[in-house]
Amino acid sequence: MVKVASKGTVLNQEISMAQVARAQLDSITYTGAESEVYDCTTLDGAVGRAFSQTGYSSVGEVSISGFYDPVLASHTEIRDLIAAPAEQNWEVIFADTGTTTMSFAGAGITWENTVAMSDGLKFSATITVTGLPTYA
Image (cartoon, rainbow, N blue to C red; front, side, top):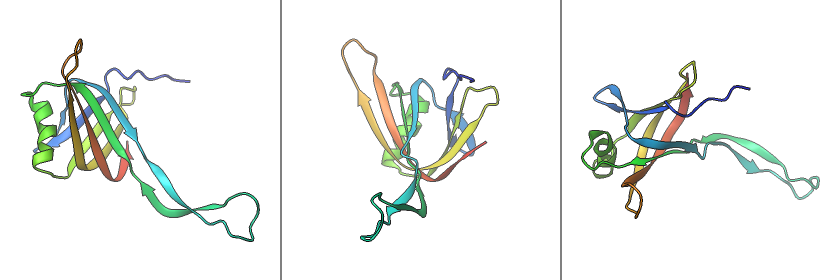
């Protein structure tokens, strides 16, 4: 089994039609993706509950975190999506030998800053994915 190191994984944000790497990240997490189902158990059915596909998928969200520089364009361009919401194209480039990518559109964003004793200034953001991500 191949184990792929996380070091070297990059998150790009589309800025002026170009994919631009976001700096100083320490975490990228994609969660919440699932194919949706509904309960189709009937009163006269077997003991086990039955489920069926709805034909839809929940596409989830991408959460990022890192060390925050309030004047770094790499961070202000993400943070500015709060004041000026816009759908953006994003791309994760994994650090595997084939440089696998996950491209997705982001419809909304949340932003947080953390100031804590004995730690650097940090930020976290969550990008709401719209449409299915594509892997290449």
